[in-house]
Amino acid sequence: MKKLFFHAYYMKSVLPDQPVRMCRLAWRVLNEDLKTIRGFDFAIEPENWSLQEEGAETDSGYNWNKLYVLGVPIYGVLVKFIADYEEADKLYCKNSGVIDLLIFEASRLKIGAKKRPSIRNYLPDDIFINFEHGIDSLIEYYYRPECKG
Image 1 (cartoon, rainbow, N blue to C red):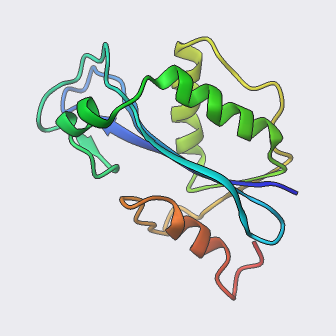
Image 2 (image 1 turned 60 degrees about the vertical axis):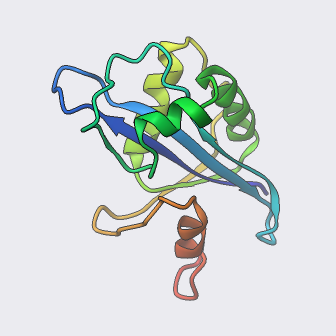
Image 3 (image 1 turned 90 degrees about the vertical axis):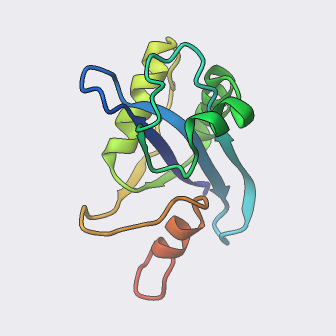
């Protein structure tokens, strides 16, 4: 049984008419013994984005300049993620909002998944997870002693 843990990081413009964009995507596929099969953490290249101002809000820890330096094209990142998504039996993420962000970006590029994980796990809204340094904190939350995972 493959478990997919992921987080889609956002960048939100200070201008209300601009869409929220995915600026980073991190995920890890684990087996039943919680051993990593593979994992990725990509900064997304902000090519053709209309939001460019310094005040953009993000949960990624990356600013606009860092995205331009480290970012890779989103299409290849999403294709790679969707391949792992289609193979996963269980999905773990913060909330449905991160899935909405993925769906927005994938539909913009006209790509999508043919199969979905049969079990999806979301955290309650009042739980805070710091994703700035990756998704380890999400995995640790789900597999703490009082949580069945």
